[in-house]
Image (cartoon, rainbow, N blue to C red; front, side, top):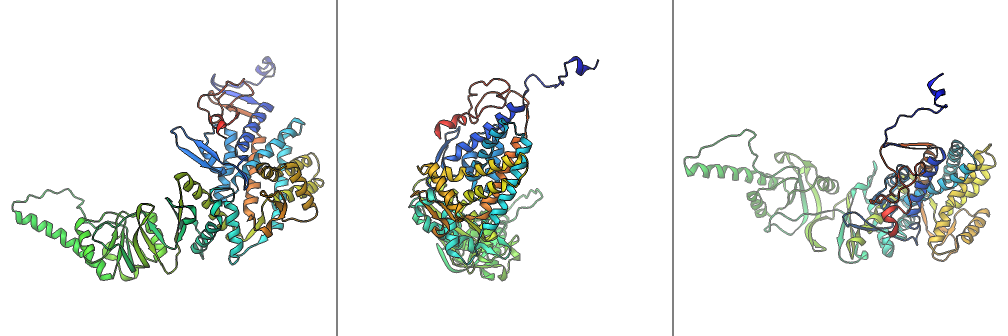
Amino acid sequence: MSQQQRMGNQPMIVLSDESQRTSGKDAQEMNITAGKAVAESVRTTLGPKGMDKMLVDSSGGVVVTNDGVTILKEMDIDHPAANMIVEVSETQEEEVGDGTTTAVVVGGELLDQAEELVESDVHPTTIAQGYRQAAEKAKEILNEEAIEVTAEDYDTLTKIAETAMTGKGAETAKDTLAELVVDAVLAVRDDTGIDTDNVSIEKVVGGSIENSELIEGVIVDKERVNENMPFAVEDANVALFDGAIEVKETEIDTEVNVTDPDQLQQFMEQEEKQLREMVDHLVDVGADVVFVGDGIDDIAQHYLAQHGILAVRRAKNDDLKALARSTGATTVSALEDIEEEDLGFAGSVAQKDIGGDERIFVEDVEEARSVTLVLRGGTDHVVDELERAIDDSIGVVRTTLVDGQVLPGGGAPETELALQLRQFADSVGGREQLAVEAFADALEVIPRTLAENAGLDPIDSLVDLRASHDGGEFTTGLDAYTGDIIDMQEEGVVEPLRVKTQAVESATEAATMILRIDDVIAAGDLAGGQVGDDDGGDEMPPGGGGMGGMGGMGGMGGAM
């Protein structure tokens, strides 16, 4: 008789005493619940009337935000399945810059719909196959329905920037800010593409959001090194040196015995001569302003001031890169190698006070390939949230310029997809048909949530939207402010095609991966404890509990 027969056909699993194993439907249920809870935690932030979350970390730091990816990053989520849904928001942020809440909410709803199918004995692999077919068809439909946009269409680009800000802290001044964002992205666009790293953001506490401005150039968070240097230089030739204006120390340890005071004087004069030569070289090539990556000797500072040169020391690498791109200067690593053609040009280099801090403004450059957005607000929290909204806005404008295609907002694409996918489901054979229909239902969570967050009746809104799309009106969506079904394209509520395609793709991949897990083996005791809860929470029974529940997102639950 074999060992397996003697054990009653029970396979032997060799696990340590601390390990936990959850199998079959228990594992699926646990993972689905975790994924759904993550989606539920950000659902109320969706749309123009979405609410904000206050997140307090263990050291008492406070973040007040409406941004899905920020909320999920700040929350202390331990559950591995929940983290798969968090990754959806991070991918969305990296790829497109906006739509993180949409992606997570769709992922959670796909799991919710799958749960019902699993309970009806539809195999998880069948659901996963149906979901993938539906996602492919959805992307096909979206690509067909997309509206073309070019870089010349300034108004549409502004509307796209505004849509990304709506419902966030920046909404109060979205007209002004949207234009600043579009101008910034268009300024840094070149033949190689659009690198939004060339749009620097400076946050200033003080003033109102409307006081925010775009500087076509660079703001360096430094002051001039010497009080005797000019505060401002007009029509400045700018030199960039990634080194130190100091006398080089010898690499070999040496000991010099000075027997005569004159010898010490000679040493000092020699050092001074070297420093004077370095400054004279800058004067000879015609530099009016010099940014140095390292230190500047006191004596060199004196000579620079004598020649009326404005100098800044210990400029960061990023600042030097931005200055080079903005002024057209070349950064040199040896001062003696600097030549006239290495200098850049700026119409104005000046030290100015901004929000109580002195900074160097490098403006009026011939072709600003590096720009700075100065964001202002009444408090730190306001400015931080404003930066997050502007980041999203910059991301969607960039994506639109790269792809050249947009879709209407207000739940219009999701309603259209749900309608067309239900028709498509009839052509899908077998039980996958049920999964395609479930996918269509899941997508309607977006217009439904928009209505709920706006205080409208979600059923009435959904019925009206369906009727409008059934009549062939693809661009109609829900106006969260009035509750009417309006033409979103005419209203200017548009967002990049890739926001939707990426959201559908990421949400589907995460949901199908979670669905296909039927066994969770945890090394160590991870039972009990809710996500984000340091106190361990209530102990959960074996089997259904491994890896912690997702109750109210633990310690954060009460704050949401």
